[in-house]
Image 1: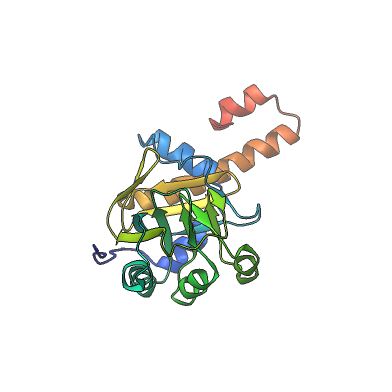
Image 2 (image 1 turned 135 degrees about the vertical axis):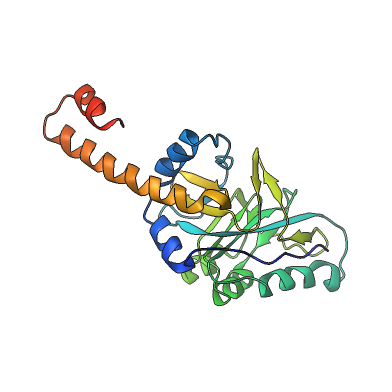
Length: 227
């Protein structure tokens, strides 16, 4: 099993997570597109368990594959190692290569939360939904199922680059998810994207105010450059 390299960040994790948590993914997507990053949105099938969930944090990529093994050392221990290596502000981002099992459940979410993680994004399934919702731990996934991973799926690596849809996700990239979906920000431009996204939100507030005040939408667009 391949394990993670060290997470390197050059910003205050709590501050950046907090600031991104109040920016909608549409604004972030627009900024990334303008900066030349055109494939940063995860497939639209990956959605939050409830519409009020949102997540913002540093990617902990996870990759797995189907298995028939019933050996706990093969199936459970790698998951526990990954959970134990989570750090404050992390978001589990998993490419399980599987459409059968639940790749996260209540105990994993509880453990991740205690370790400081802010949520999970799974290109697969989740279970124990009632308990997860009571925890208030944001989970984005493709489907729900009661099927456990034992005899069905194993974690192969974590902390190394994965791909979900057309999006590459590395350890240290930044992940933001809301009602619209999930977007991945390359770590090299995290702060630049944050600052530009805050500017976009501020500008769109002026556009909204102008339109509500009766300004023609064309005039509002030409004045502020956004719509």
